[in-house]
Length: 329
Image (cartoon, rainbow, N blue to C red; front, side):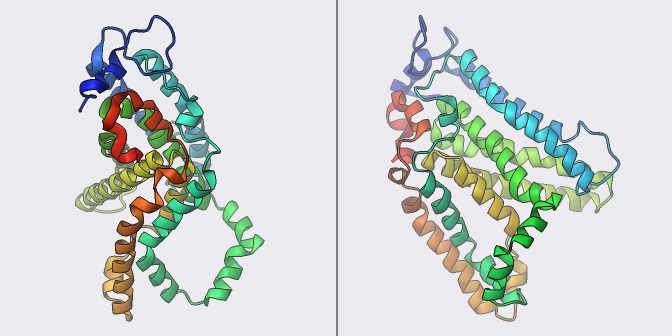
């Protein structure tokens, strides 16, 4: 893991006779120990989050409403306590950002409306092909579909559905809080913002390996299929985690990653194989290609930090000089 280089080492080596607004390292410990503490803190958060799912003994599958309700309690407790881990990390390393902890974690009002809308729009553009596929396969027309989506009865039914609440509300909120809002402020001062974008998702990807135990326990498939599925899930969750980490740093808000996470949970992984066999294959594949192309074209403009005000993580790394510049401008 790379430490801050050159002038940026001052971030981790300024002595602490008193509380300083700028970053400083644990006295006499150096950058290596700071990084070690950061990684251990992130690992403890990941283990606590996953471990909280298994504190309840049950013979029921994970999708049973009773299991989901118990796990809601566990992850909400862990998530609400996770900022304490960031506070403890700050005490151990001596790194004192000039911004409040909640602001550093993406809870702020400045630029909140573009932070909620633009990342979600960008993600929907990426899913242009799957959205077209969903529209083509839907038995109702657009007007009827909008009526169903906007109907209060439909929302009431969703809010009473434990699986919907888990996939669209609780999982996106708690996972982004723990794996992005808490981990990135701890990793970034030691690795720099760029490496943190790719390091943080590794904890997120590994945390999803616990599904193996569920599948093995209920014999849902063969051993080979289960591990192949786990490897595939690790890959795309890690890529998705890197994307939401990028959004978190570039916007300085948690709301964008949470909404994008909820949307992606709803859409699922794109059904590319089904698209290749679809009766309207050509326009559909054109939609897939167009969505990816527009996403790459608009990624930088729609996440331009100028749209979202001052960025807390970039302010934390200002003493490091140019190491934070690529993602902060």
